[in-house]
Length: 608
Image (cartoon, rainbow, N blue to C red; front, side, top):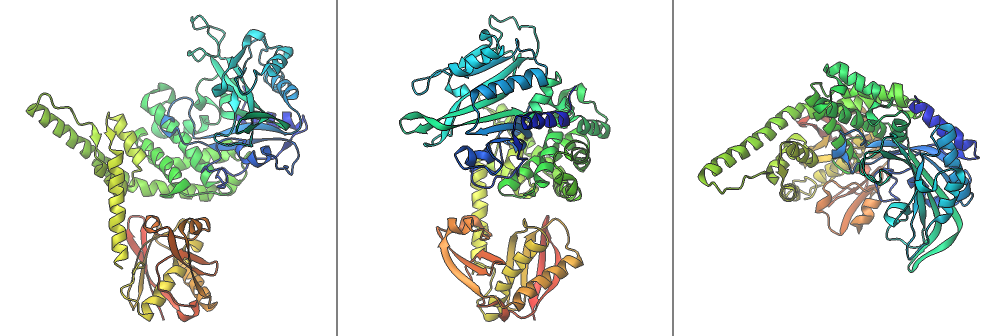
């Protein structure tokens, strides 16, 4: 048996022994340069260096990189899908190439992990009109001791790497490593790596970037790169003779906790097993995303929406398992304290914060989950009654099996069910969802909301007097101060201003403490005291977003937007009007902080 910690350390020590520098893991959150929300592969953060930029650590690199992939969220629940996983990688940036890499991968698999050289299989590029058959790699593998009959030539779709739709970038063939899970063949004529029985498992691959892609094909590169990727989760299961990825030590502690809480056994299979896998996987990913160096929180947009979707799916399956959503906290503790604390030391440092945010989301969603489930059941019951009635009236009637878009939107708007969650629940019951209708209902809701906002001078103003203008400017300072004191995820949810006072609604899951209210007041008054100019600028919408200028209702803006900046403290898209300098505002005082709706707080404030 080999543990996850042993595997992680063995990979790094092996390649350090070959002159590589461990560059460590980078943030899971995409930095925007690669067009994805999360890092989805170990090589992704290294793309600038694979494209030719010198790496400060040298030409031989290795690491174990956390990754998040969410394209298969609905598949999580089986034995092999995960949303978070780790990639063990090593790279040569214009240094060694095929001879060294094939030898080292072979050494790692045979000497370090004890695999039988005669059972190892590998696939190589079969060649096409643009690039030749990769006989060089095949011959090197044979010279190492892999039988010629265990080498398979596959086409470009299987054994070639390149960036789609780009020219001038490195690309080339790869060879993938396979090994049989059992010596027993399935009975088909050719029970090899191409057999659908799944006897052979892929354990890693080496990419050889030896060409440059041009408009006319490929030309050889002067500086050739190697990019290696072996999945830690998959490799760990394989080395321990497991076909269930949730049986490794990455998950056994979390599963044991869920078994204890539910009184059910994982090995009994069925819906309880599926629920435990989903809760464990999604909680692990939530821990990693919240605890990341660029940690995020659940929200209704961007990466935060993906996190919320995962957490709410886990909470729903807690309900299916018969345990409260707060059980996610206990599962999270296992991942932080027993599994990943050593490899990711930031997690123990942020443990209290991570657990509190998980608890907050569970409390927020559970408060409406039961009502939402009743609404969902009521919707299906209505469809069933309609189908039964219509079938009696007309024997040729075709049963309706689609939940309407407006019903799906109500679940989203009133109960916080992401559309994907409604789709998944419907699928479990044999129904579909009118996604186009949902989109139409969502758009209609936005248009109505925007119309209301426009009917208030684009800022909740009842008039444009000097008093309301000053109070409107104060709302910008208040919004920025709330973000600074409470959370960057705080956003304006409504505003109403009269000459006497401002009313400001914002998302936040609990009442503010007296200390927090005092800090917000002090920060606003500090900025008023600095007498900062309020600078107006009209600019393209896309530029405003790129510069991080805050917008409250994104879809109402045109190609050009009006922006108001109060130094670097507050920058918002807004229709105005505003004071010329913050010193005109006087003294800001919060007179009341209260609940406005579920998850929405309301502040009333005055200028004195």
